[in-house]
Image 1: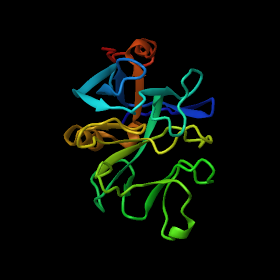
Image 2: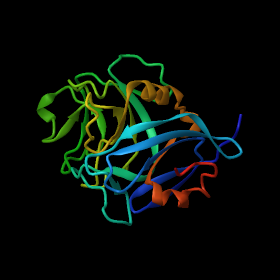
Image 3: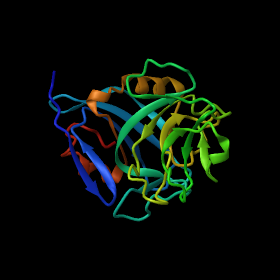
Image 4: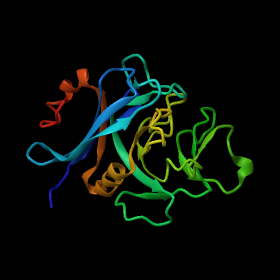
Length: 226
């Protein structure tokens, strides 16, 4: 078995994981675009494509940066985060799952907290006593079904106040309208992604504009920027 060395770099309040063997690359044509393309890769000698490129839907305001550049991603801005992030876990409405990443059963007691003044900000947790719910939160068992399957993107994992929360990969809305800041796709490709992800391969997602993709090609030799 290949030995993977992990290293963490803390930049501007965000931790970046190195040593990934699986990579999802989401390329947006420009900053404010709400449609993008997604390609999966696995690390061999270089990064090699897995499966077919597929269309994805971004936030209603396009992309926002995790650090250093404007526009910064902030709570409620409708921007999907631009940068490199770990894929932390999966979730879904089924009680049990065959997904390999840690799995959250999204029942009526599972919430993701997006109240910037709450100590549980940007955390997924079960709350049985509804009297302790914060003023703002995501109900993970949504009536529209877009969280029937999904994965948690490790954006703002330091829970920096107001910098954005509850960022997922999830199902498209029925009319494929933009998200509130997540990355969405159709059911068939989403299930392929979720079944493919393996915790020992430290999966990451890279979301960038095509014009900024080139600077990642040295680190991720083999990825395509078109």
